[in-house]
Image (cartoon, rainbow, N blue to C red; front, side):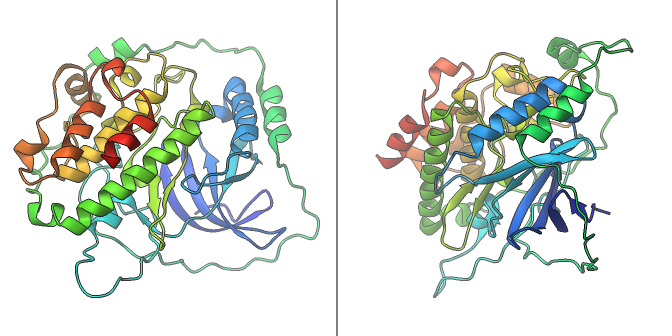
Length: 374
């Protein structure tokens, strides 16, 4: 059961959950406005340095304003865990939006969809893969509970800094950092059961001219969003289709930008060895724990574009270990070999974005936007 109240927000329903935390649909009890509330469930609750980073970065995020970037309103602490209040976007994930068949007469209404249950999980908890159809959002029954007359709210970046100060004490237990090389060469924790072969993509559906036009437009808007946040010194680190929403006006909205950065330093591994990000969309340098810049997001953008052109991600495996080896050591199959009818220009952009070495990719999101406009 989700909490009923988080700070000044009344929780209505759960929108999605992942490694970084849980996102709730909530109501600001001070203004009556709906928000998306992300309660961070790892890192910052135990790491004072990460909590201070969250406070600093919130002050940057709160100043951002771009039509393709979801607005961040507030931050605070709930039972020792930081949260962020963000603009609530009603719409479809990028993948669901592109699955819509708009070739018939008229334009259908885009019904809002949650990210919970849209994408089935695989044995090793990568929740952004698989096949699914668009699902309308349905608000579950919520039992109203009268708020207390005397409510103490812990909001704002100062409350997060106070959390960090309270937790900033010497460790009394032995700790051990886990290196990426150890993670890569360690045997899988458990063997996943054999999975059925992926269903062949519907090439006719993938190559509909109307869909290709929507894909190109969505990628252009997404490149604009990335250009904006990169220009403010932010790196998304967890770019994937479920973090990209499209509203009823076909406006693409980048979600959760920068949030993954709060859970780690410049590398990709937290103190307990957990990687930050979604495995199938990680750049090679993120897997290796190297310093990241905007080009890591551009690699993830390439994975998204490749997937939308072919119906599958560039690399697939049964365990993270096997997947990381493929990402680091092999090249993705040519888009044309999977989907001969795919747009050739988009395929070239995807493959350049997927280069192993950052210096061989597009260097900025502006360059990607220019290539899409050609």
